[in-house]
Image (cartoon, rainbow, N blue to C red):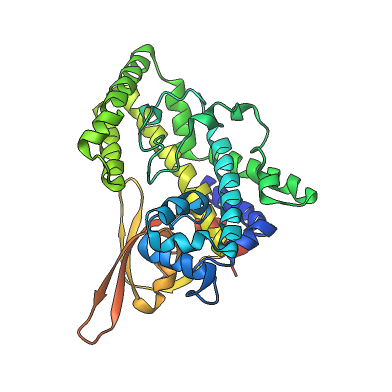
Amino acid sequence: MTSYADLWTAVWEQADLWSKTPLANTFRIFLPRNASQKSDGVPGVLQELNAGFGSAMAHPLRLGTNIPPLLDSNLSFHRATRDASFARWLAAAQRIDSAHRRTIAWFRSRLPGYPLIKAPQLCFNTPFTTEEWTFELVWTRGERRQGLQYLPHPPDTSSLLGTPPKMHADLVHAAHTVAAALGRTDLWRSFEEEAAGLDDMAKNELADARKRLQKELSSASVDAHEPALALPRAKYREQVTADLVASLSGKARSYSEAFRKVDRLITVAASDVFGQLVAYGDPPVLPVSNLDLRGGEVTTVLFEVPDKFSLAVGCGNVVWLDDPLMTDAVQIGSLSMNWTSTGSGTLKLSALVLDATSDGWQPYRD
């Protein structure tokens, strides 16, 4: 079994524990893919939000943070804030969101150099640290001031999830198992090696890069590019940050690239995929056609499914593909709809292949 199989096993077991908490049950029951009806009450509001803001709704455990700004952006949603059942649901979503973010922050605190990681991606106002809309799971300044690197487990998770005392030790053990499995991956070890290999020249180049990036991403600079619209502002931060990292040389660049990859690993495994398992359980199996594997830094796959499976193929969803060429699960990244002259539809999708999930999750599949 590979180290990534170990990681997926640990993520599954942690998600299974979280899904059994009373708070998770309160939270999950009304999600669009779980609700028995999707037009009224809390499920109706969530379905409407999902239809209008799919990318913001793609991460179930972040909804406590993502939904309030969406409600404020459209007056038609204000009725929801006055509904007692929706208020109770949102309170549950915010508690599980907080528990999740604290857990991710604790995983990140295991990285070498924390909290003073030298990667330019962590300077002020990048996609990884901004207080505005971003596609990233941000690193907050408050988290990095809490001394998480000295704590034996994620803080307050059990109390936020409302777990009985007998579950606390299991939750702590599950978090330790995920952290240990992350630490055995090649991406984590690569970042450790890059951090240990930084010399004075590389450290100076990284310090200069952080200063340049802070200037290029100052409030005035972002405003000059786009004064109001959230998505163009987010894309600008993303492009400026990527361009700066690409301009680095030698050890400074390899260190920054290694940080990007290990941070992405933590986000995909312990947030994106973990959240899908907590919210929805064992991924559904989809019948697929025209499967096309693509290589590169990560392996992706293109495929098609009939439009009747549209509820199972939202962005962010984790699914199994019913094809002998694809034994691992995948995380859907993008989709489009094609209609034929007969009125039937086909969904075209692109997805990230979750390497070694076939090994890591095999013992737990229904």
